[in-house]
Length: 361
Image (cartoon, rainbow, N blue to C red; front, side):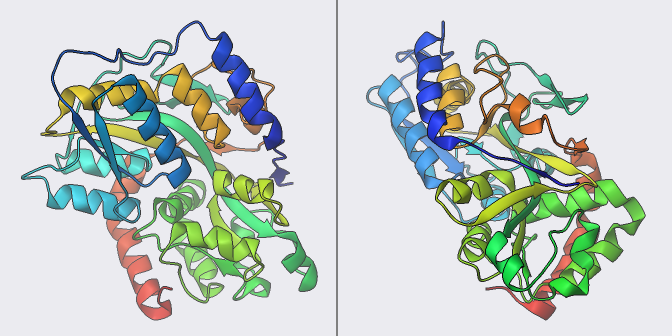
């Protein structure tokens, strides 16, 4: 049976403030590091409210420093921009997106190693009976928060059309769902590509057949990841193949939606970050990475429903803690950047054809 997550979000902000007040250390960098850098450029596709909070917090710790957070328009677009600027890097830090994206950036020579100095941050943590690596073996990227792949659904739309709640990814191939499923464009969205890779991890050689069956039930692909949640929240579609965090935000806002983790498995979706190779402000960039991994920002992220990766930073009984979110889940798959990179051409060719046929909106 698929598992639901019930989040009592009105409790979260108060709870995180209590834990922040009682923390012995924040792990945040010192305000005056003596390197003379006064500007930091961060490429990030993170939601605007959190982006503003991290900018304001870092600037408050570093008087005289200006943080410019730029969203290039999706994770794939962000890394393509990074690649196009490789001869003259404009960004200092790339922030958000999955380690799968970062693995490709490593292959392209776009990133530079940095070992975080944030107290309490560990390079791996237990998740779902195995260990999740939070840092690249050579420190090219680091994970700062977690979400999970799965399906957001609108309870009223399912009831209106007398549609069953799917239990697995495979169920999404059922023709009964024709034109009732929406997905972002996987060639531009890490949300969509992570679900595609999740299906590949679960089903192996059978995955392309599932992709084809699910594609048959989509009227088109969305050019925006965030739009898929809006479409389902407002009842224009029954389901969106997406991530847990935006679905839980919609629940908080009172929409008749819920998020389910497929019985056949849910993949961990990590938000990672890295130092850009040739960054013009490398010292501030390193301090920013440590700041994002500080207790303060781990708790701040929890207020926005980003699951913290630092163990012990908050009570595990709280709804947004990793322990609470995963306790009733079924099979959990860690991201497999090598598998994604190995099948990159297959995914691009397959979904390139689907998108040429169906189009995007």
